[in-house]
Image (cartoon, rainbow, N blue to C red; front, side):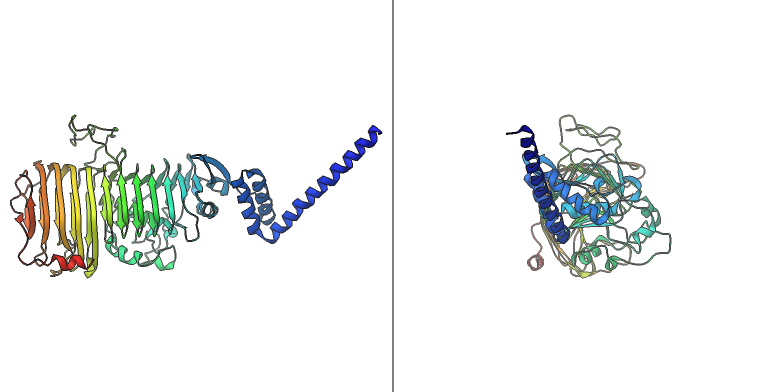
Length: 541
């Protein structure tokens, strides 16, 4: 056969095949224009099938036609032997210059990540991202999404952004399996709030009943008391809040200088917090470190981190494991190696446990300065509060107002029961052990007969130094505290010109001394009260 004819024939066959393929791709393109969702599904399907480049090309072509701009592609990374889709906020137009509002880019990246099981939304290291209030909703999201935070996110400091006031800045809602991890920072830039609003309202107790009753999103329903133009609103936001979610993990990140609470879990189950640093300076107010309400099966544990500073704060770093804290009298003997974890330096409680919480396990936490680790205040405005099965152990508390504390308002209902405080090392704490059923913020609190019942509280192996009083048990006349057990309590006074020392105080407190204590706590009443009303309140929970 003529060679020239053979070449010509081959060329004609190739041309026909090319046109057929082109026509097929054109048909696919036309179908995609008619149904954008099918193309999106196809592009994601190809990505999961390993043909990411083809799927990404179709996705880009479709979006270029609609917006005349190239859209981000879904990349694939290997994690534990399986493939996972990643969505980088820079690919969605985030500037990361610390000045431009990157909220829309974050929302767009989240919208895409939300559609893929076990996807990862990436906030890369290096840039600083300014975000207005954002809610990452999970109502229609797939499971097990990862928010990889390696960069820095900062809050706006302009009053115009906050309008009349919001309850939170960054919020993750109604998710099943959400992890925030990385080496990045969430900075609430709270100093502009602290200066203008040294005393905040409403309190955490009021927020518990208000925000737990319904999902709080960033709408006009959250707005409260309008302030004068140019001033920050009176309601200060929580920096990072999780609402109505399960299997939540927060690890590795730093949360600092929140206007109010740093990290809050509301209506969540199966929560883990570890390897986290939470800090705010000593002049901040009402800036709880970690706040729990209506949440169950929560574990806060194990890592070593650096602390912020205040007038009495430690200013060195902790080693892992550590023997001492440089630059402070809060020294741990060489023969007492302790594995520390979260170091929280705030102007309020390191950890605050509110109503509706059970199954909370806190261990290896380094707390201070601040107000210590607290259950409550519970029962404000005659409300019912139920807290049970809480363990705090293997923890160091230093330079705080109180160590481990239970606080309730008069007039409340419900109960606090099944609480264990074990292996607590306190240093320069004003009052290391406290139960206060007469808790009151201000001077206008009236005496009431009903109370939140407090029973089954165990204190074991609590040692260290105090600067005001070792133990303060102030319980209700009508509903005394019962089942209070003390075992191996060794607290030594630190006298100075600025403090006046007092001995242990007990009022209507019943229980048992398992061992001799230092100093002697002879004010505790043995056994149970004659008229025991605790059971009725416990049953109400």
